[in-house]
Length: 273
Length: 276
Image 1 (cartoon, each protein chain N blue to C red):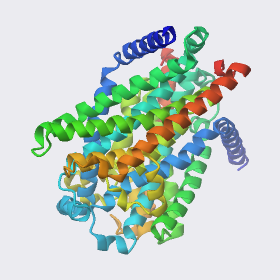
Image 2 (cartoon, helix red, strand yellow):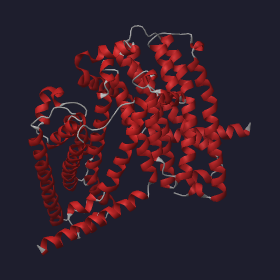
Image 3 (cartoon, rainbow over the protein chains, first blue to last red):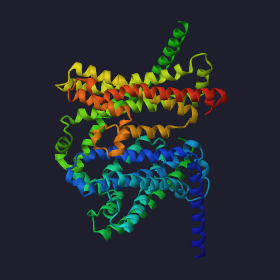
Image 4 (cartoon, rainbow over the protein chains, first blue to last red):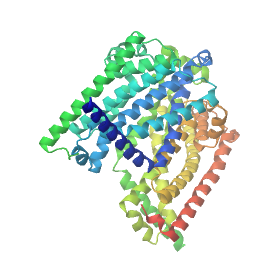
């Protein structure tokens, strides 16, 4: 019992330090925060306004369209942001030459980089609240989720699974070093295939590929919780499945990261990029 | 006379230098030409996913737009112009600051304004080229667009690029003053892209966003271009957008120049212009 407590308190200490470091780094660039506050809602409008013209006017009246787009955008920003957490942190430390120093400590490899999630997710939260206010004044649409608690749960699982993907991406960076193409491919395919803005049935036969991606179920559950749409599986089964998928993705990515770190250390290629 | 000759030589030298640098990256410009088509494709695909096969018919009935592709290519090309001019002006000045070559340019007896203005001008010319190449397929395939329409559209474009060049002087001033303003330029570009009616008529914007859109030169340029190339209206002088644009041709360059002069004058005294 004492062993577990010591382990947990050490882990909490590492998380605290990782968060502190990243908040310090983030506070150096207030302009980035201001830019996000302007550009994220602007890009939402950039895609939503033309999309509005593709649907019959009567469908806009009940407000579902706006709600669908707003929440779809929240999922998209969360996926995009969470993907940056581990993968891009590894890349950044690699470029700055600090990766070797960090990897020579005995800190948990995921926790080392998870600190980045703190400021990024806070940024998303503030921008989402601010965008909701804009949406409400501009379109007079109600954005309240159908099931607030389930929404929180589904969004946490969505973030956890995406961080798992981000760690896999981090492992790929350790393997391939130059990940630019991979970054774009991963982001675009995840956003397109997981159906943040539409039910995956609309993808036709491609939906079978979507169903192989763990993130699809988290997005589907989040859509159900916010918009009241039908789930792919039974709601309760999907909620449990999403939890196990998050656990599986995080464990798998952590093992992969650890394996590739050790391989790089043995081969002396950790410092290469 | 000697003064004019010197300024001309300085202008030509910077133009040549920037041209040589830009010609190293032909793929970047090919991408800019391709992007309006990509954006049109993304919107079309999004419409299909949301509304199924009847999406295009709904779009036509709600906007009165017959030619969806040309409508989007015109909007997308003008969006590219603002992205190229603003983003690349900032990147060019930032690269000079970072590489330490800005000081070399500034210790020369050349006019500081000419040095920066030439950067904005070459990018404006490049964006003009991007527009021509991007819209050429439209000119060749659309039956109703004739050369006269296209010449009028290019005249409007020349007018529309000037205020954007004025804004780019403001971007130069901000870069010299605050150095790292990439995020602000990104925000500015996102606002311009969203509020200019790139893929929709401005009429669909809610009230206060519509007002904000009227302050952007790109909104009026896109509107005029569509009137000329898609609706074939030729009485240019009758369009209020043309007069708004003409007024912006005065206001934005003057504002940009004033901001540049203030920063440059202050920077000369404090030396902050050389810092990075």
